[in-house]
Image (cartoon, rainbow, N blue to C red):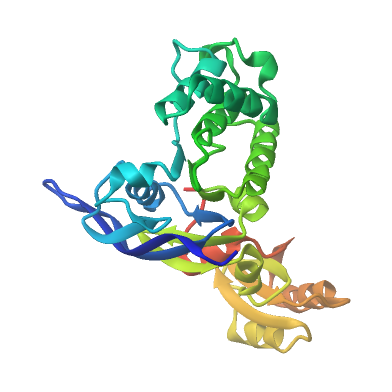
Length: 316
């Protein structure tokens, strides 16, 4: 499916006050129906503000957001029927059981009691929660609580599910279980838009993603295409002895078969290269003549893309 279901144009959000803060600065974004789409960036990049506006929880300063063709500002109540939301923090009703949290959500969206019971039973089974149906939220682990929140958010059959930092605070096993739960939503025809600052999460889940920083989209593509944009299949970081780098070294490295680029990094050089037999040995031999102290190897990652664009660590 290629129809656009989330359409964001010229979105801006400025928080006024003694010192105005621009949280979102002219974002244009289109998400096709059926995709899992990610907003990847550090804390404070503008991801949550974008989601808050798209889900009618905040008003934009300028620009527009349409969900399934509905303007979320002009027709917020109608738009909410097409939207499911899982915020960063646990919002389950602590006075209700797992089953009641889901069933009351169904009733709120107009289902009959019989329909709500059937839908709740289906979701409890789908998210492997049946044996915890009578438990209260405070008795659940972080991973289980997150699965309940996702089940509740899709109970009314929304067209788009927004997940804001869905794996924040989860242990690795719970994170993998959450990824599996999100991946199955395609089978229900639900489009997913998620925010994250975990590269592995974006790489694992997303069909397409946008890297965002300082309220702006820096680049947008598939994870594979973004990693390929680095221009190499291997990355060698060369840590050199103090003042050992030279233009001669850079020129010799660039002339080495398989090398596609050489960049300066703190304390040394980064060599980008295509996979080639004997390349590492050639790079090390050449750099050793100029005071090589250490070498590390890596595959191109989304973090590599981000650092190349911004010069700072994605995990801030």
